[in-house]
Length: 66
Image 1 (tube, rainbow, N blue to C red):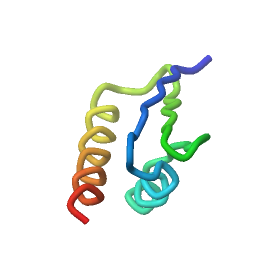
Image 2: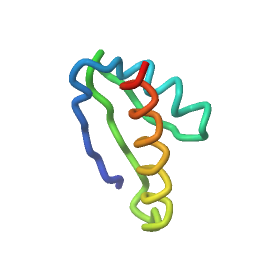
Image 3: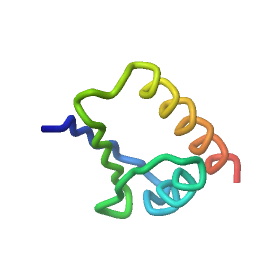
């Protein structure tokens, strides 16, 4: 059993976000051009979620400033 959460990226390319996230050690999924899927295991620690959110925020800020 896993948690599942989707996020719409509006005008940002979800596959590009996934590519940049992978470089930072994050494993995300982009089933559509503007949709990200997060699927952490049920035993994920809050610190891991916080770290992922910080990394994702950095990636999104980089892409929005380009």
